[in-house]
Length: 235
Image (cartoon, rainbow, N blue to C red; front, top):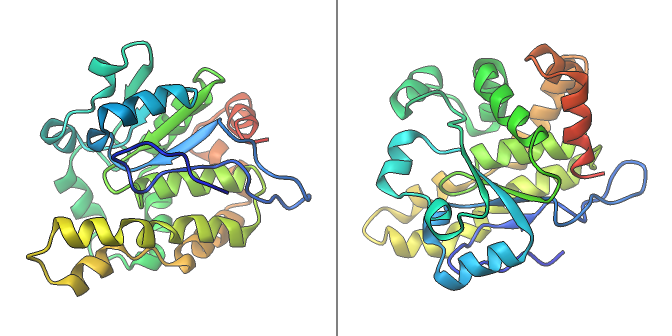
């Protein structure tokens, strides 16, 4: 399925068109995942609005947002803009919570340790206008990838498609990040960009062990109505 073209972004895709377990596909123009919107060109901002996006959700830490302010509030004031830091309040706090976590287990660590912030993010998506919603972090691979994987799982998307969506960020980002950090060790850059499919499969197993994704979402504080609204974004 071709990705939306928002000039300036390199890791963006619509969560529509993914195969579901019952033989259907997820709905397009409802949920879009992306990398950092500060990279958008004027043409990219125009394309974003033209795609039907009406809500933008920024998952970055406050210090990240301060370094590279989101252009949406100033350039597209007709859109609703939300900023909810997914991984605790500060980057330092998250480093303490997630020290020495393997990439393959990163998603499970978030599900275990960031329940309040995760509930806030998902509740915001559930309560957003029915038109298109875009969510993003910096590279658009880990925080954004976790939210995408949860929403796809709730829509009963095939596990292989969920894993493939997560893994796609690495190839999408490779050329841009190798050029952006040309003075760094390229092997370190490539490892930082790696999004192993096993991480998505481990997340799905975590949810299964929790009684299923609906049980997990209720356990972190979402109502049945919110869970239904999240599922309806893609079905």
